[in-house]
Image (tube, rainbow, N blue to C red; front, top):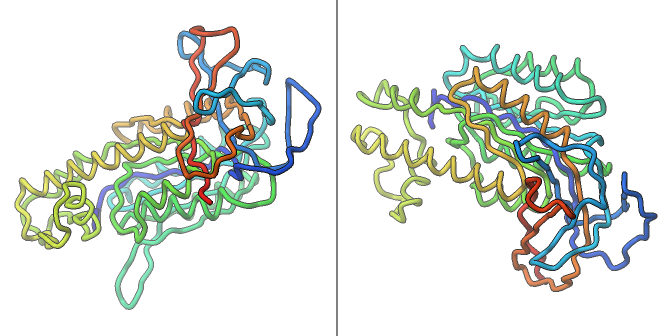
Length: 368
């Protein structure tokens, strides 16, 4: 949403690692080890979370407990990492709009989340800021810290978090991928966590670019979806000079989702109250669809929160998930480079029906 849009947080934590070089000519040999199998080359990485019949997270499993299938064909597990190994986590903080009064709550929630992570887990943070360009203010992505294990530096960075006058949400997700999740030269597991409503207002990029960038990384993406719609719509109606406004980018996204021409009704003040509510409803629906799609495809989850006071419990659940996540890696037996989607399924041996398994959904093969 435009200036003053209520957006409550996008915390982006980068939790799962993976290079996705799908095909290697020579597969290095490793000694079998139920506790840890690691090959120093790129694999198809699959983060996995296992729960028992009552939803409790399961620890202590070994490589020999798992089977992984690609398009129904069982694959050989070439890499296995236990749930005890550390993660790199990237947090994206969306503090746009009216969250000025909630900044302390946001900082406390993020600080507690960081403190709940394990020794060896590292964190990097991205937020929003307001820049002045040619005399006009503009929301921008702000890298608060690179990946670090220094808890004091992270809390100092949280103290510097400010508000922005817009939400470059897609740009921030791309920034998290490019500046925190890629590279580094270390073979570490990585994850992304986002706290916010997921409604973009000012990005130059689009959701498809985010999807194309994140999915090949093989990381799990978590969302804490804060419901800001009631507040927005309360301030959306009436005199357009005083109401919260949709950005041109949002109006284009709305009309595009309906298959309508983007040129129509780009002037917020020409929209009646009924149409403003229709635009708002559709933008939130799109945000929910996008969050659900990314979470499902990567093996993450979406945690609904009616407001920021519920974010703490969601953060605690995510931290527990991270602490019980396994990582499997395999080389695909399908050597075709056809650009097609390959579906991944993970099972537990001899435990059918006893446990639930949440894993990465699949990947798109490279194209010659």
